[in-house]
Image 1: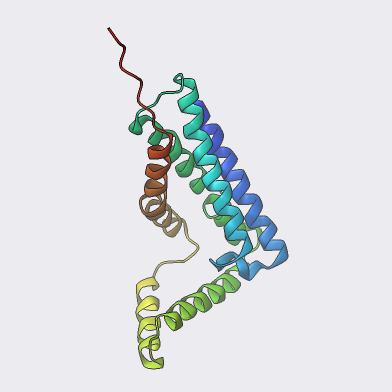
Image 2: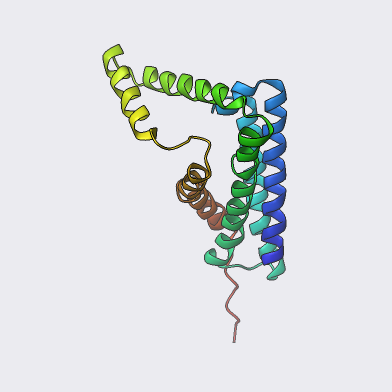
Length: 182
C-alpha cells in the first residue's frame, strides 16, 4: 500500500508540475490566480489521483476497507504530490532557480488577487488599504518564495485542504466487511 501511495503521490506531483509549466508558458501571471483553467485542471488531477490511491488500497484489501485505512493513501498522495509538485518544490525551483524574473510577476498577480478578494467583500477603499497594509506587514521579513514559506504553506495546505478532502474520499471509499453468518 505504501508503494501505491508513493506512486500516486509522484503522479500527482508530475501532473501538477506539468500544469504549472504549461501555465508558465501560456500566461505566467495566471499561476498566482485561483480562478483559472489551470486551477481546475490541477484540482481534477489531485482529486482523481487521491481517489485512485484510496480505491487501489480498497481493491488490495479484497474490496473492504475501514475509513482510517482509506484515509492514509489519499492523504499520503496529497502530501507527496503537493510537497514535490507544482505548488511545492517544483514551484520553488521554478521561481528561485530556473526563472527568478517570475517573482515580481507572481507578486503582482498575488496582489491583484488579494485586491479582487477585498473588492468582493465590499470593503471601502480605506478598509482595502488597511487590509493590504496588514497583509504586507505579516509578510515582511519572510520571502514569499523561500523554503520556509514553502514548508509552512505546505503544512497549512495539508491540514486545510488535504485532510478534509481525504476524509471525504475515505468516507466514500470505505466499506465494512460483512459479518459472517454462523
